[in-house]
Each structure stands twice: as structure tokens, then as C-alpha cells.
Image: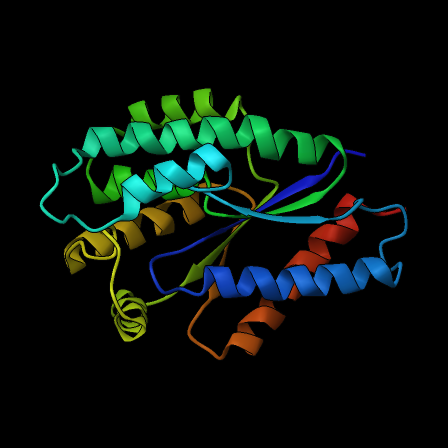
Length: 221
């Protein structure tokens, strides 16, 4: 049985990484207790950028704050994300899905549309073409957009310490990114907004309820 790709999206500080770990633990408990019958073979957690060895090097270039070195142009940034995605899809995502795993991915194509399309104002048609090439046409089975106010998200990041290059962009950039996610949620089926403002456990319960419904559809007897 082919696996399923569940993607987590959101602005900086939305809690994606934390919620992925909550969902992983819940899914593994569900599988161990046999609640899905002839369901997935396991759960894999990964991310973009940085889900492969090569991708980790690309991630460092993309996210490290500028310290006097030559800054990335918006187009170079876009192409680096595409390169990371192409490597990640071929080396990690497709093999995992072929072997029947549930894959939880921290960011995917929607982030490129939101950050480089809406945030950097690059051509959306070009971005969609690059995404199609890099993914070999692989789309998510479910995208969970953890929706959070931009000021609240950036406030969370500021409390954690030094910001990376993307986090250092101005608030208007991040507002455009938020608008990019909102537009995709309106346009795409299976792109579901989750309120990210309550406590971590409340958000996790919302996500579990959504995923439980999809699991029943995917792995119904």
C-alpha cells in the first residue's frame, strides 16, 4: 500500500516542528495498538530544506544570517529551495511513500509559493513550474496550515534568541507570506487551517482529529 504525505506549513513561530512531534507520537501509538488495521508501515519525519545530507548544506546557505558575505538574490534563493526539494523528493519522499510510510514533512511546495511568491514577489507561474519539476508531480495528501497572527509568531521567535536570515525579514514580508498561505488554503482541497494560538496540547488535539478523519478515509477496511 502506498504511503501518504502529510505536510505542515505556517509562518515563523507557528509551532510546526513541535506539532509534528506530537503527531508522530500519536501516530506511532495508534499503529502499535493496531487501530488502523492494514494501514501504513511506519511514520517518517523530515523537513524542507535540509531533509537530506546535501539539503543540510543548502539549508545552511539559505538560513544563515548575512555576516558581511554576499547576500542571496531572491531568484538564487528560489533555485536553492528547488534544488533541495528535488533531492529530497527523489532520495527521501518517494522511497518512503513507495514502502507505505506516513511521511510528516515540515514545509513543502506551499512554503515556496508563500515565501518566494507572495513574500519575495517572484512570478507565481515560474514557481509552480519549478515546483512541478522538483517534485516530479508529487503533491501532499494533506496539508495542515498552522494559522497564527504574524506578530505573535515573530514574538515567539524573538523570545528564542538569534533569528535566521528568513526570520530577519521585515514584518511586511511576513504579512505577505501569511497572505500567501491564506490564499492557498482557499484555493486547494486538502489544505486545512488549524488555529495555532491555543496551547500546544489543544493545537495537537485539533490536528489529531483532522488526521484521524483522513486516516479512516485512506485506510478504511
